Amino acid sequence: MTLDVRVEHLLRDLAPQVLGAVVRRFRDFTASEDAVQEALIAATKQWPRDGIPDNPRGWLIQVALRRMTDHVRSEISRRNRESVVAADTLVVAPALYSEPEFDSEDTLLLLFMCCHPALTSASAIALTLRAVGGLTTAEIANAFLVPEATMAQRISRAKQRIKDSGVPFDMPTDRERAERLGSVLHVLYLIFNEGYTSSIGPSLQRSDLSNEAIRLTRAVHHLLPGDGEVAGLLALMLLTDARRPARTGPDGELIPLTQQDRTLWDRPAISEGVALISDTLSRGSIGAYQLQAAIAAVHDEAARAEDTDWPQILALYGLLMRMSDNPMVTLNHAIATAMVHGPRAGLDLLLTLDSDERLAHHHRLDATRAHLHEMAGDHQAAITHFLAAAGRTTSIPERNYLSAQAARLAANHK
Image: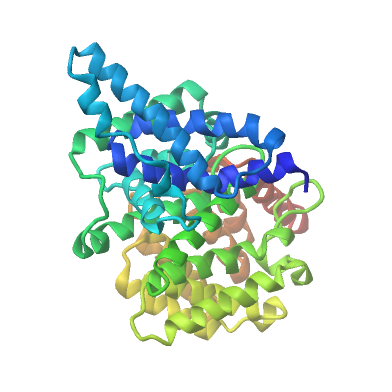
């Protein structure tokens, strides 16, 4: 690995730590981000030439703090205030950052601020990827197929909303953390899902987004190793992402789970995920992410699709339905029911989703109905629902797959 590449990777890892430290001290998200960006730019110019400093994080914080001090002095001067006294209170001695170890609370603080419950999911995702993930505004805009200016405005509004909320830039209390950790995990979950199965565009998956979600969840797990749901979410991501190499063909076409070459699955990731979920389930308290990870583990441990322990999966979905009203859980419960008790039983359960506005017009409901009708031998109904699903999805690989299934059935049952 060249020095330039090492610097790039190091800066990506350090950026959220540095931003968290600066935000904590100056309590100004936007100005702190600008200062950190200037520090990162300085590092990209100096480190390849002079070498990486012994304490790179301390180096970046010192540069960012100098930029922030200059910013504060400028603001104070502009407002005709006493600049010397105010600036003296903001200058931080370099010795304060001489230790190589970083304050883990800074990264966690930043995650909690970006995933504030006052923000919409879309805004929280964008802000998390920008501030914690280190992606540029252009990269985030490209991932969600919106103009860069639109994404910049979304991120700007999110930062302003955090500022207006009056929430202190300090670690939340135990009660506040318990209340807000769910938002953090939900945003990371959404980022992973968008990367694993892109909701729009020509590619089935965006590995940059799913990898970033895994990286950030690892960071939260490192900071909160005793939290079962954090461990469960990380296990779920690893066990799901392990199938990524087998999910697409040579031309990027979708390959369903039952037809994947399981020798291509990432076995080390599966082993790590199984170990994580096994450990956390043994502790007693079980949450929704842990149950989803347990289901993923059952899938991944089957050497062949026909070896899948569907009765165990059905039981796990039964438990999950008791703690979640998510219609996607009901949908997957219907699939498991069909695999254990037959397609008609699964189709009967799907009827309950027709009145749920969250999923009633979603392509996945039609796609599931199509597969179950095919299992039941009603090929005309299957064709109808495959075509309906193809017309509703905004993912080109999914649309192509669903259209191909309808064409296959039509050709085979003329």
